[in-house]
Amino acid sequence: MTGPLLIALPGNDALADALVRLLDGERGRVELRSFPDGETYLRYEDAVAGRNLVLVCTLDRPNEKFLPLLFAASTARALSAASVGLVAPYLAYMRQDKQFKPGEAVTSTVFAESLSRHVDWLVTVDPHLHRRSGLDEIYGVPAAALHAAPLLSAWIAANVTQPILIGPDGESEQWVAAVACDAKAPYVVLEKTRRGDRDVIVSVPEVERWRNHTPVLVDDIVSTGRTMIETIGHLAAAGMKPPVCIAVHGVFADRAFQDLRDAGAARIVTSNTIAHETNGIDVTALIADGVRRLSPRR
Image (cartoon, rainbow, N blue to C red; front, side, top):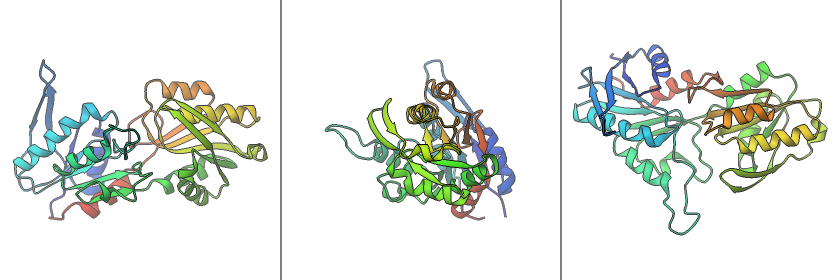
């Protein structure tokens, strides 16, 4: 049986190499560069005809990555690949899942429809599904939404003494409760009011009773970091220890990472769905299991 041919889009080499070992696959090579006018040039350097192809492309900063990804997927099909799957540990364009104001684009649907036309299956980790019951609501191909909560729980249990987990909002309570249960730790959930992309007001209920615990701020995504930064201020005012900030996806828009450190975070930890110096939780084996479920066997 021939293992899959894995193609790493730029910035995804470490994850692709690790998946090759776990999946008994092979690394494929692709030449990808820009013409002087900014258009993309792409060429497969290995024969892909008859092979099960796996494109590895995490989709933070998606606007610069999306067209090369579509070119890679479409070209693989044109070259008679047996199948074309996508490993996107971080899946972009999930937040705008309804029209909040008249005239807005529901970008999650547009993005999903476009991607579904070019790949045969999709594996991702903890997509932002606040108003969706599953990826099948918008994606027209088999899609595995893997859950990193047990890995976060294991890291907390192994690295934090007497933790108290703090979730970002009421919508996250079920997810944070599961992490806390596996880590054998108590938890509370923030009361949050979002007034804009970078304007968040939060309060921490009953924080004083946990003063002897180590706060662990848990979220699926840290992007601007405003919720965590606001929470750190509340915890400091209540006399609590500097918190550990932990997230599945470390997007870190603009200065978010430095701002979190400056705010007083004791430690910032993310998974390797997006390559960053904070990566301390390895989701590679989780992703490999998802690929085994969806990728055709030959």
